[in-house]
Length: 336
Image 1 (tube, rainbow, N blue to C red):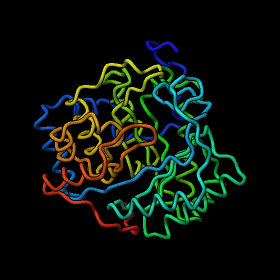
Image 2: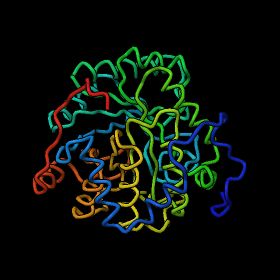
Image 3: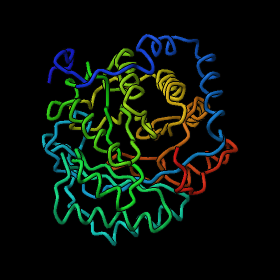
């Protein structure tokens, strides 16, 4: 891949629609003095959310590795030598055991991720449907990320009780081809449209630290905020630089720039869950506190996020306690 070229051939929307917010407005938010930006974001956050409650999610890799895509950040791509061991789709009962353990540690949301380009109809999809039903039966929010999704598949997942479908845009349309070549930006937007049509809540965000410019971060948030409906959940990932991937040697994103992105996301998508996702193991507790102050109100618990390290439950609960914050109690009827 050429990591310098703009993706001029990308057309991120087939239908022109009115903008809720322009790139210029998002740019101006990024350019605010940090104290003013965080204060504004914290004020918006308090209008819509309890600032001392954090939703704890738990991510289970239900099928690991051997993915045909070429996402430059991912150890699960079959195109890179990362030393990752392939693991086929888990048995439903094994997923339920992990979900029970997650609930016991305080998580009220379970996300199940499979390294597929797209989910195919058949026994494996049927198994995922049973996993969703099982998680819902525990009184937990259920989320899956299975790659590209067709309309009828989204309808089946909705019928099973799925709350959220995760499908990240990753970066701006202009930078996208520098990260992935095996599916288009429009492919991602089409999957999100199928999710919306089925009445499933959208979880979509991106990854920071992939060599993108601030303008690319502006472009990512511009795309998310101007979807036909803004996502109900916006995960913000800090790139975990994984050996063997093309982005293994990418320069890490500046901590303050990460906090700025959280704050801008909160201001322009006030009703969304803004989730600090991958990369917390490389963040100080002070930086995470700034993220919560700037409007983040969810994070992933556990020792692993798919194939990446995560701080672990004991450390997270101790951190929240030191902040005077608490893990949110499950409320699966909450439509935020």
